[in-house]
Image (cartoon, rainbow over all chains, first blue to last red; front, side, top):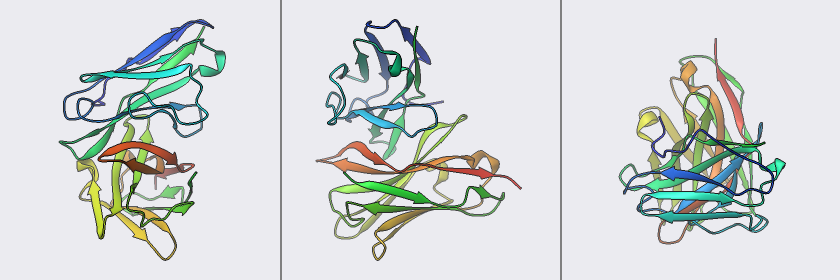
Length: 110
Length: 124
């Protein structure tokens, strides 16, 4: 069982906006930067968001992140079929002195 | 942008040692602003951080509690790479293993670069 809690699945239609939540605790999300990753089948995770809301170069501004207290969210606007993937949040945990990941959310574009 | 290239066997027998190496291109294993990590992924465990090594005037190591008694992460400055060694493996260690680079400012910020992954199966 992952310490960071994500919904197992979300869905949306093309053009729609969807959000994925990530819930943690004070020693992790409450104290740490949050990352978001996207993973396509058969490939490794790719960084989408770092430091809660920063996008690496090349990541479109359709992807945005936010954090409040011990929860974080990833929003995807203008949904496209190619956004179908698994999405993971990650944070550092000061009490464990290690990184934690969410269990992943499968995004389906209907 | 840094490139991480993994190598290692895909099949390990139970009770033996799993070894995967990560060659670093575009950065130095001795860089004092990053850390070098191992993460694994399996259907049963999801993404699991295993440990890290980093250099701040000397070498430091941190390991996940779940594998602390069985893991060694070893930097190799002569080859600019680092390796994962996991001892006494069981079928539960079957996973895809990734090496990653972590960036820091005053604290950890993110894993920005990942190796291609090494699928390791533990089976006799």
